[in-house]
Image (cartoon, rainbow, N blue to C red):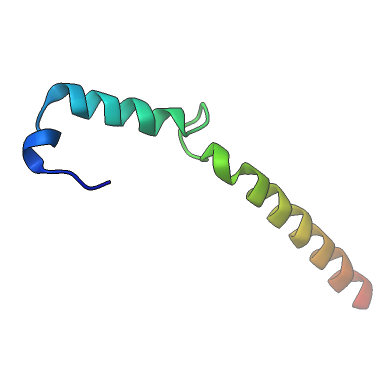
Length: 57
């Protein structure tokens, strides 16, 4: 996000930025909603890799 400091200094702008940031996060405030599909894919991939590695051993 890029803007002039004078614009960011306004309370309305800061509040709007905070609302936009909070809207993109889950309830716990840690995992962005847009990353959930990517995280699930990565979790499945890791589980398959561990299963394959265990089978090889």
